Image 1 (cartoon, rainbow, N blue to C red):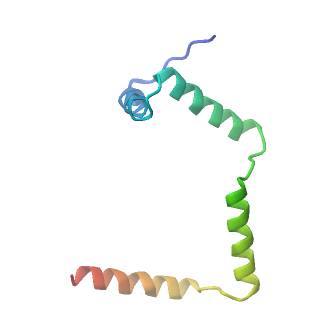
Image 2 (image 1 turned 120 degrees about the horizontal axis):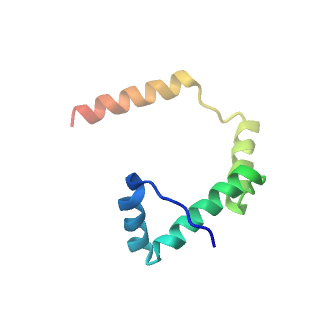
Length: 86
């Protein structure tokens, strides 16, 4: 097994995650490294739920169920105004 140095800036976060997940910090670091290497060197695999969401989104596009950028901006402007008046 190799050793790695973890920068001090990540120590508290790693310890909190380990506590929350009830796992040793070493396991958390190993999982993070595994995820990074999988992302970096292998083609990412989509989960079945991600594939299903994409299919639903494409179907919505095919049906013309789209919203313009202007409509989105107007929605959030109105939402912010309503939130500010509460």
